[in-house]
Picture 1 (cartoon, rainbow, N blue to C red):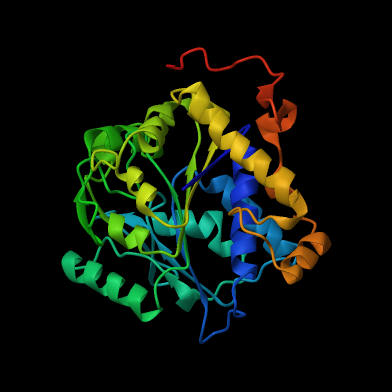
Picture 2 (cartoon, one colour; picture 1 turned 45 degrees about the vertical axis):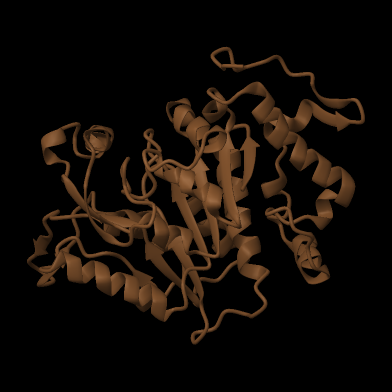
Length: 336
């Protein structure tokens, strides 16, 4: 597992956006209609900046989504659909994740409608809907890259604390903390927040060939510390990423407040050593050595340097004497 630390939310979003682009272009095959790139996507506030970056890359001609198939992580159960009289059809609830994804991403890229897969929270048989979703993922050969965010209690998707780490797509009761956190999307009224959701399972996410988790904000610092510095624990479901062969967490400085200073320095030093030994221009964002083709593409691309934004690392160096920083310490609440 790798931990990448950037200065703020914008730098985290840039890194993850470029990471998706590199993952897409480093495939051994060019995505086609019959062999698409399969992408898992989250909702919530964490990925909004990433989606803006993906729209920018699409508009610049860097990435096409015509041969991308998406599977979203979750959806509320029972949000009413609104009948639109003039079109004799239905519109999704404004706070449904269907609406969120269209507003934030799908309406702005060239993805085909039939390639968008989302759970139906209004299905007559919710269990059958969950089984169908898992079967559809399997039909496409699994997910290549799953992007995700977490809640303050460390849940990934709607896999609340104490969820099974071998869980699959299912109906889930939302924790009270999650209901309170999401009330801001329902006029601050917790009575309007759905109490059930459909969600992919922890194992569904971990089956992806690559997993990238976005963690930003001081309110998620305890969850990050539990995930990084402690063992795998079903009370902090994001900690399952420790067991993934290609797991990546991209976080901002605020979210590291509960990490030990030496933990932060360790992960930053790894990135600096890689760059010093191999050269920034030769490294992919997963730490792998890039092929000549990808290096040429990066040089041509206007997005080539965004993922390498140094953020908080601009005044930090790694030498034979060790890791140094000329920046004043910011983590006054850290434990040593």
